[in-house]
Image (cartoon, rainbow, N blue to C red; front, side):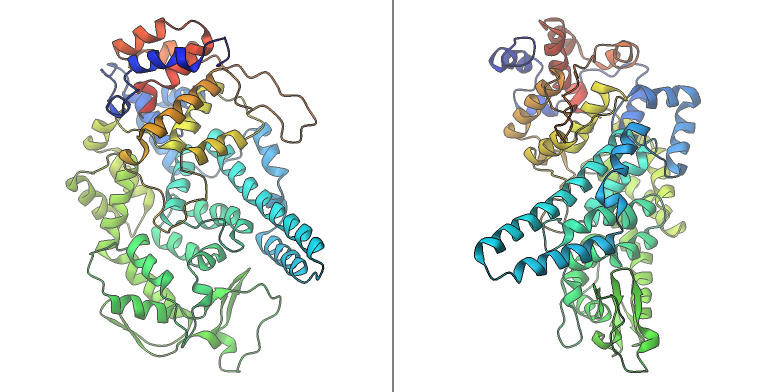
Length: 513
């Protein structure tokens, strides 16, 4: 039952009349665009979803000013109620190196216990602590998506994390993933691609995930070298060879992770070549110092400088400009972005030396992007986050676990994609019957105020009433005009405000951005 006494069985026919019972209906573009809907649609695309604050900013300065503000926005604090939740987290209070070393010590201590029962209890405590770190990482990320003023930076942070994907449950990455998002990805999300590329390479989460911490001279591991070429930069079929992958793997030897406090014992000639920053380590004793032939260039054996030279070559490649521009255009504009648009974005990428904000500006000011507004089918995270942003319109939720669980149910759990390719960005990946039924259930849960978003995690305080009023001034002034006639007709048949909320959050207009 949804709140207000309406059952799912009673609601389903109304959803069917909205055109969402079948996949064709789910992907149908809203019947007509409101004559003055471009600015509203632009806000919806550049942010994690419409709310009053974002529309007020658009109205105050116009679309060009709003876009410039989002592209140039410095990192901003969250509203106090959300920031307080973030500040209380262990991942905020302890540096990543300290967290990882502490958790490693806890793991080793548990493994050393001889008594089976005690060992199991210790292992369970370790896994619970690691799960808590992973959950905090998800919560902090979602709170920023929901409430950060620099919304475009948060969208690009998700995009780049997905592009440079790591999976939290591998090895000890649960203790690292929050820092990977916060320090390797977010500061460079609107900066230069070359800087972002090196930041991900230097982070222990990436080195653990793709096993480069096991890559050493005479014990070559090609995992990271292959993925950085195939997925992160140049792309499949762009002209590099298997020999290039092998040579890059040799260049990457010795690039790894160290949890030890002291520098390893090295030959005097190698000591000046040793590099350490937090948990990142370049150990020359593990490096292949032979010369390499990479992308048609000779890279002399010299230590970590070889890595810098290789990253320079990769980042400057026209293939990287095309591949990255295609990925960005797919995310923001179209499942199959027009080649002419990608070419203009790639040209900007090269001329600006990989300035991500400049590439985005080329995209956002294009007629192809404008034509796509309101037609992009939301993937699970855009659907769930935009629903909460609209439903509660700035009111800070107290518990992000329901959001995390919805994403898991819709197969797009935060930091959970197992393979390096990241989640699919094309609409068909998210429009199957099971996916849509889950969305309808989420719409009911949010619409009826029964989601648990305002139930404190500690259980010490009672759940706060959380019935949303979506049919409000924001809806009537800005969103109502986006609805097609069939949606208007179905919404008029709602028997309660809760049912109206669920129907609207299940409508074609809301399913698209």
